[in-house]
Image: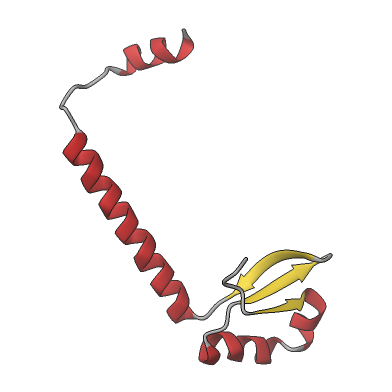
Length: 87
């Protein structure tokens, strides 16, 4: 994962939680937490999370607008949909 700026094990996280949180909160770091050598989670600051959520929302709005623009108004009944899915 290219956006992870640092990495700690779960043991290191337990021992240095305040430091890891400070790095994420104030330093803007994305710190990967590994378990058994594999990335298990990422600690990020609230501002980073809010930016990611805003980006996701913008993508969702754009996808909705595209779908609405492409909507031809034709509708399918639930009965017909089920028939198509089971055939």
